[in-house]
Length: 395
Image (cartoon, rainbow, N blue to C red; front, side):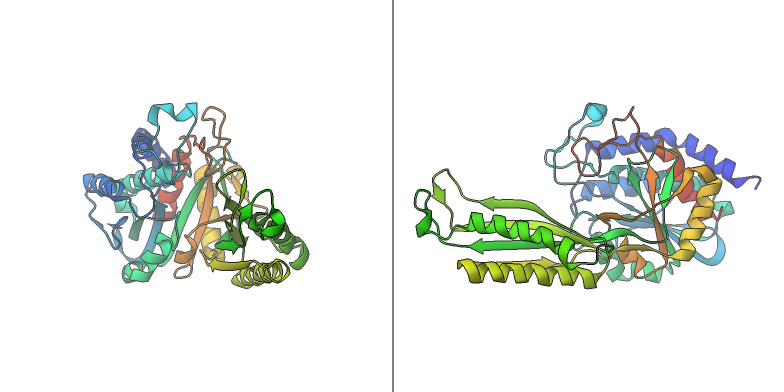
């Protein structure tokens, strides 16, 4: 077929309005991790409209297959479908605000899903040009442990389909529409979580000498946690320790008996994560010995780091340069400290993950992931769907 790249680009334009409408429908009807029942039904319905049957290896989410010419080439394309448990803000989205309180697509998964449905339409339109098989993965539960990527790979479903490579993307407001950013090797961090409860001895706020104040001790512990990265790790090794929530007390004049905190640790290796966990526990033991508190400490291992396969990354770069133009493909200088359960697929299959530019003034999309004003510039679909289709069609 003459200049497949131009034909794919034209198809992306043809399906652009569909992707926008799909994204806005999903945005208005978000569902949080592992509760994406309506979302799954909607995706299955949209796939059926173009003649594709979807299977449900898990309770939510689905997988569909597009068959091309006989070949052992099997490429998987993945989108995550869940929303965050939060409320949203922002005038730029007022026409399609979430209609479900406590749930919002403030991370872009509505756009990931719409983009992959758009790519599915393009690939299906051009299936005569397809060598082998494309596996479309609409995955639930990226935002919550243990991660839908982990659960899906554990079913063996993708392995039975013979997947050889897998590709995924994330909308990124740091880049404008038309831009593609990626790098070989580590690209996103390992996100672990911790939970700590400190038990002291409560009492009257006017008599602190008769208490063991867990609030003061918790504050000291938090401060010491901030020295773990700066004073116990190699300065060249990326790592973050963040306390995300603290809770204690109920009123002005009572020193509580308990305090709790939760947070996250971001690293690029299990070894480093465990070293940080050990240091956190040593700090807690030191506080207990010096003050008389007791504590519980749970360190919950999260997703592995996202590490792009060299060969898949080179292939993705080459395709992106053809689709978007050489000047629009950016090599990231450093990895991101955010996590992604796409990493579980990469433990089973060679794969690559990339950032799709989606930031612009007109969409007020300067806000980062998980902010209530987070939004995307929908022009990103023109590049995103074309690139996903291009990698599947071997452009």
